[in-house]
Amino acid sequence: MALPEFETFEYDVIIIGAGGAGLRAAVEAANADVSVGLICKSLLGKAHTVMAEGGIAAAMANSDERDNWKVHFADTMRGGQYMNNWRMAELHAKEAPMRVHELEAWGALFDRTTDGRIMQRNFGGHRYPRLAHVGDRTGLEMIRTLQDHSIHQQIDVHMECTITTLLKSDGRVVGAFGYERERGRFRLFKAKAVVLATGGVGRAYKITSNSWEYTADGQALAFNIGAELKDMEFLQFHPTGMVWPPSVRGILVTESVRGEGGVLLNKDKKRFMFDDIPELYKTQTADNEEEGWRYVTGDPNAKRPPELLTRDHVARCITREIREGRGSPHGGVYLDIAWIKEKLSNSDEHIRKKLPSMYHQFKQLAGIDITKEAMEVGPTTHYMMGGINVDADSQMATVPGLFAAGECAAGLHGANRLGGNSLSDLLVFGKRAGEYAAKFARDHSHGDVDNDAVQKAIEQTLIPFGNTGESPFHVQHDLQDMMQRLVGITRTEGEMQQALVELGRLDERAKSVSVTGHREYNPAWHTSVDLLNLLNISRIIATCAIERKESRGAHFREDYSQKDAEYGKFNLVVRKDESGNMIMERRPVQPMRSDLQEIIESQR
Image (tube, rainbow, N blue to C red):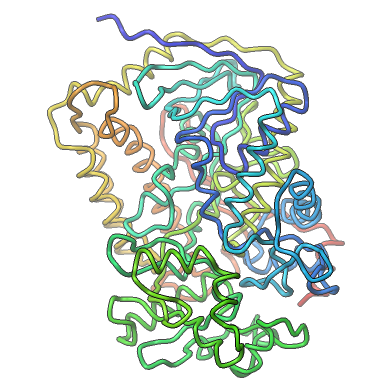
């Protein structure tokens, strides 16, 4: 039977993903005078980056003159439990201020201090107020600015296009194959270099802040052609997602609420975060609620409130309150910003000005006025610290010609990401990925595309149309439910082994999922394609989580509840061998450069 035809496009660099990292990479590559194709799964501007609300972490010292890149570096390493790629943490801390000022020069309208500088706010795990912000809509402003700037570059944009396969020749990437989602037409993209900027894996879970695009595409694409993945056991659960009504469960409640003075309360209205403060942070944490409030309202001599400890710790404390029967009526806890009326005469206006999105989100979706009532919140699957293993300077993966940036790349955040570091990560390493991808493209010619590999990709994608099994939506639902139950915020050996068994069954079901109709406007078909990536990466997450027999950062095991120094000496790296089997390696953490080690010691 003759297979469908496909349209061919040829570029020096293609970028898969059009969020903050993808757009910043596209701008940088285009400025290097190479041809650029930008491919996005959704509409341009619909990237999940717009959901990042709190701000961009950059040590500009606008709100506290003691801040500098060294403190930011130390905070990032400490938050990541020293599992970070220290070179990436160094580059990030040094270059983030430049990237923010660059964004400002391109038209970003940041909130301002009284003397006209970019305003910066407090966030969990950061020693000083460090997040440059636009109310609680910072990600939206970033995407708007990058899009407005990119239209002046020579960039071709392919919207609503899903990439199913990366193509290799002579050991390096030579292109990508996929289809446009509206009409189902197949497309081949030939390229000298490919940048993956596809985001995370949140749609493998039932409760998540992530948008529908986050189906582990980049991680699976890279893994399937032999690239290494690293730190896949480290999956962050944001402490505060909406819990009511059920239709919005998991939608993010920005950390800015706590940064602006919000406190966490159990059903007894007790501020429970004071009950469990790690030794590592006790010297920086308020001894009482009054000191916590002074810090939030801008007194640089006051200490950090416990609500602004790292996300992994806050999420576990919330989970503890819920499990021990001290949760709110709908299975969460209370987040109260309305209490600041005791401190500010204009509290209603202050909240609406600082947190406009949160005000409207709760008003419209839950019927709650956050200037007068507490919110019900609980942990939600939020961010993958692990991902594609890349070179710190160039962002190139272990397959030549393949680059990655943003959430789909590993290294910067270690075992746990600090809030706000994600947006500066997109800018710093999106820029670097675009720069070095363009350099690689200039130094290489187009490789040969194997027509048989293209035909195989088409055949694989069309299999569901010939099946007679169940709907892919059923399998996806069961996968999300299983991962939430068995490989969630708290983990045990027995539950994760059970997850692997269930993943085997889900794999068999996925092979026979059935899609009816044709390729035009067919959501079931799209889901059947996404499902393969989700199953693949879910198995890797569970396998790595079983291997790491300790609790560290976002990875918490009830059967190994303490950190183990031996496990802190290596990262877990996985890849697919020539036979298609997953190979796992304990890769030693690289010794830190002596001058950076001195910085860490000086900041303890």
